[in-house]
Length: 473
Ligand SMILES: *[C@@H]1O[C@H](CO)[C@@H](O)[C@H](O)[C@H]1NC(C)=O
Image 1 (spheres, rainbow, N blue to C red):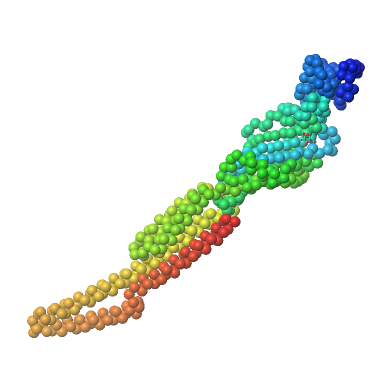
Image 2 (tube, rainbow, N blue to C red):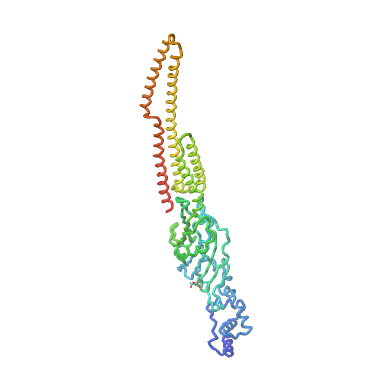
């Protein structure tokens, strides 16, 4: 009655019938709530009419303020009055209706990747929205308010969890959620996800890791809750790349998303799985590990030019080999013991170590041979030296002494000299039978060394090229 009266009066003053619209009260709840708050429907009429024309009095603008506030919507929905009803159960008018959750995730930062613990820590932004059949209003009734933000405990929220998460998020959850007039509820949350991720260090440090973040409900089955993603893989990759703040020792490569149905405990549930691909920043590892080993290898190559006499070469090669051992010790600290396949970097290190070890052994053998030759030459020299003593004695004694008395002695000397010469001759022929010529062993050692050096360098080059071809692809 009051409404018609006001309208009538208004019609008289403004003279425009179209400007007076009846208040669009679509719900009984609104009426009751408004009367509860001591508002008359007439006030609403005033507002409606004033909304249509610019001619408003001071009093109508006061009334306008009283219906344009968020509280009106809260009262209209009964959010405070029926609090429990809003939070207890899935907000659908028919239980057969599914609640569809649109999910979106962006990676804001890659904080840590621990190969030894197999954990992946990332800071992610999560956005989700779903429908609530009870949280709706007509925005024309409330000054065009299309959305309100309320504490997140006020409404039902899906019980989504991240399957891989192994530690509770320490950052406080987002305190608010947004209700749109059409019943869409929007919830955003930024959180640190400490998740377990199976790492493959086979190609370390040139490896690409992929870690999953899967969203699943604790209790709702497939027939009740449908989780789906809003944007495709290329979109989320682009967004994440744009917002990425820190990447630790990784380069964000891309991100993919798909949803599927899993059947844990004979209970089908939908899951949305985000996979984050990242490549290790390998430059530092290359410079601080792979390169030094190559330098040591070069040093070992150049040691091939060193002469064989003495143990110098052996000493030098052993030192280089020990340097490689130090690098191996460093390697043990970096790599996890979880990989079933031997990582290529271990093969690289051990392969080079093994080849250098072979080269050292060869040097020892060659040294031994050269030593043997010089030893036999010493023996020969000694033999010659001994033999040369006798002619000295033989030349001197017969002529310096008296001829008569020493005649017999001279004869004996001459006989001994003859025997000695023969023995010398025999010895020479015997030794020459064994060793065709002096320096035979040195010659052999040189030949072995030359052959082995070529073999060694080729083997190392082949090994390295095969390894790097496998490593870098
Ligand atoms: C509800 O409104 C919001 C904001 O205008 C929009 O983003 C959303 O898609 C709407 N939801 C439905 C189910 O129409």
